[in-house]
Structure formats: C-alpha cells, structure tokens
Length: 324
Image (cartoon, rainbow, N blue to C red; front, side):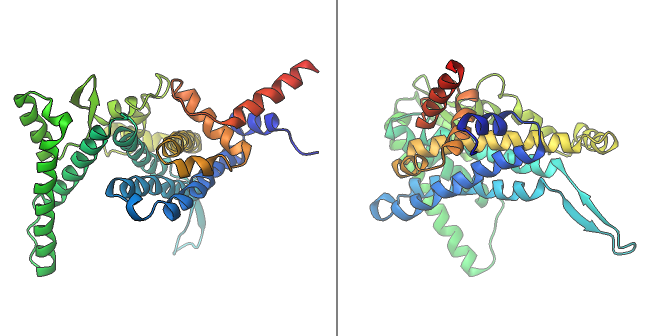
C-alpha cells in the first residue's frame, strides 16, 4: 500500500534517521533545481533585466551549494598513500561554511527583492549592492595587463553611473543631506547590508539582515552558530578538536544539514513569490516536496504569506484520520 501524505510528511520532517534526513534534504534541492530551469528559460528578452539576472544567479548559487553539501554529508574518503588505509572523514565545518554562504545569499535576496514592494526601493538596494561589490574588486587592484586595465576602467565608469543613479533615486533623496553622505560612505566602504525600514535606510549586520527576512527567535542565532565553526578563532579550533574526541562530528553535520534545508526552503518560497514562473513550477512539485518547503518556511517565518495547496490536502487527510 502506498504511504499516505501524512505518513510521508511526519517521516521526513520529524524522523531521527540519517536516511530520512538526507531524503528530505534531497527533495528540497531537487525542487530548487526543478524551479530554476523554467525561470531561466522563460525570463528572457526585456524580462532578463540586470536585477532579474542577479536574482536568478543568487538562487542558483544557493542551490549549487546544496548539491555540494549532499556530497559532504556522506563524508570524504582519504587513502593514506603510505599505509593504503582508506578513512572516511565527515567534516561538519565544511558543511557549516557552505551553509553560512547560503544564509548570507538568502538574506541578501530577501532584502533586495522582497523586503519592499516599492520598485524604487528594489532599484536602490540592488544598485547599492552592485556598487559595493564593484568597489570591493577595485580596492587595492592596480592591473598591469592591458585587458585588465580596460576592464577596471569600464567598472569605474559603471560605478560612477550607478552612484549617479543612486543619488537620483527618490528613496535616497528623501534622506537628510547628512544621512545621504553617510550612506555614500557606507557604499564606499563596501557595505551593502543596507535595508529600508520605517521609511529610512539603515545599515545592518549579517545577523540582523537575516532577522529582517522575518525569521523567528528560534532561528535567529543560527548565523553565530555557523560562524563559530567557520572562523579560525580559538573557540572554533576548540570545538573542532572536541567534535572528533567526543564523536560529535556526525551530530553537528546533520544539524547543519537541517539548517541548510530550512534556508533553501525559505529561499524557494521567496523565489516563487518574486517570479510568477517559479510559483507556477512550484505548484507542479510532488505534494510532499511542497509540504517540506511550506513547513520549513511557516515554522521559522510564521508571518510569511507564502502558501501551498498541499498543506490543505494534508489537513484534510488528518481530519479524516482523526474521525475514523
């Protein structure tokens, strides 16, 4: 007999087995790539603006890292060339590093494309992000090859054009002159974690930019947790050693796997909200895949307006079961 939707849902969302955890992760990765392709195929011509192109690449970056994490969760075999003994090494810090990049990409995607419905805000935040990035590449870079010199010159011209556009943006113009100068200073210092809150432009840190996406208290400290395992600080080195001494590495690896799945689920929800094509494709996903993504999103962003008809199907099934 085929398993019911509710049986599959509870197995994949709440089971403690490694196989089920990997399966639920795989379903979210597969869903992301299924949604990705139609967007690339249909967002073309005039629709393929620089903003949309960057949104598509940000999404693809996150999902590609999901593929890498899928490989890492099974560990990597190392064969000692001297003894010819093969050892499987499961390194949760590598998974943490990739998950943190997903974390930052998701935060940035939401901030630019969904934190406001005002196109002026979207234009401004996107331009700030682009200029900050180009300023980073220009910093301390004195090209000696002619090809690179030409590229650097063109980038400087692009930066100047974008700065002009930023200063002409209606949202920027509403700020006081002193605040405008401060914002330009942020951009010059390659700060792009700027959001529009209560009709004001505000500079945030990465953790607060993540919180700005609507995540609840249960999830807001995950960035700090990931950072502890990534930075070469004393606490990071201490934890790395303790993991293998006490065999905690597998436990940590699966914790990071779950965090990564939740971040991808929230990004898929945002991507489907931003691109109608993505939403259309989301609705064609298997119901269990929709449920995992919807559940992750609703659990950790309870005020999100993202919906899935699959949740209604699950609720109907549960009512029938309870009435038996």
